[in-house]
Amino acid sequence: YLQNRPAALQERIFQKLFEAAEIARFDPEEKARYEESLKYYRDLKNVVDTSYEEGKAEGKAEKEIEVILKSHEAGLDAETISKITGKSIKEIKKAIDEAER
Image (cartoon, rainbow, N blue to C red; front, side, top):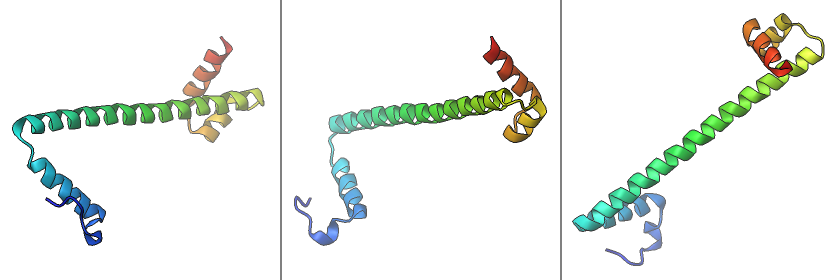
């Protein structure tokens, strides 16, 4: 095991190789702790990634409703708004009805 690697071995691929070698040297208890830590990290990353994607989808939906409502306020009919947004006339009318409540 090299404590100080030569510059030629500093590249990312070598870094991963050295990390894998270090992990392979773990005793069973260290390996179990490492695996648990890795599982926790992956679970947390999945939660963050999922939340991010849900947030993007929610923001997009809110923007679509905003466009529908502004188009309606500007005097456009549901059919025209449908052509602009790609939403069905039923979805357009529902968004307008919900906003007017």
